[in-house]
Length: 403
Image (tube, rainbow, N blue to C red; front, side):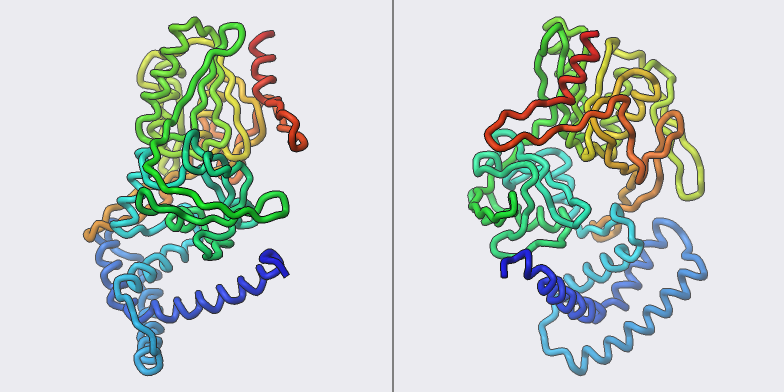
């Protein structure tokens, strides 16, 4: 029986472990919850009567758990860990995949990653519909690329620990470590397992790469919307323009998003001044419209390439340019993440990242859970091993521009 066949047994084991962990977590929940309530009230004001009654009910149950644990539990307790996991459990109860509580340390790491610099192996990951953490692609010249990690690889184990069922953030935290150390990975690929040892190094993420294609067509690949990427995009465009580019392909395939402002900064380079770029609606159905602030610096035919991993900030840029008729979209339907998170800083340095608004395209088309349909749907055909793959999506973009 291989590991795949053991998966159900593993899930049962994990369920038991989670139950025990949850039971342990309630030891300090009451005091922790009072702390959370205090922080929460500082941010949003009074708690509703229904919510307050729910808090009282939960607190009563937790006190009963506490008595049982005090009497019967034999393990050691990390009080801070228990407190952090208690708060995380409360936020997880929202059942919103994008809202989360982060400790001060986790928030610091999150910001480092958003700046595009961190110590790790250099891969972009996502979670598929089965809950598997899948490699989207290794970063160029990264340890992951050197070790042979490939797009589509499923990460099964990290340093001997089974990570099936964990989200990308947890898997990422297990992969990262001190520079110069190594991490052992077990990968599922083509119905077989591959193991590899990968060295951790300081990774610099270059958000943009560009090149000149045939017939004075410029090409810009944008891998993420981390801080500073709009400046890199402008520099790349100006470089292509200096080489004579008269048309532009923007490749957002596998770009899972990032900072909304970075996407809007790029849109502002293309969309005419005062044109709508984005519409957002908050929990109270207050609508806000973001418009272009400047005259465009990019005035040429544009084709955008997208796929099922183009998400969030990518969809903001795609929807903006498509609805304003500034670009033709080629590829497959985008992911469908149409909500925005705000970060609320708490008194101890921890943060609450909370979904606070839904966004819509300028024509008020819903994106969340829907995605954006391209103007031309083009699937990529997987070629047999040893046969060079043909980028039919890029070829379609070139065909459109050469008409």
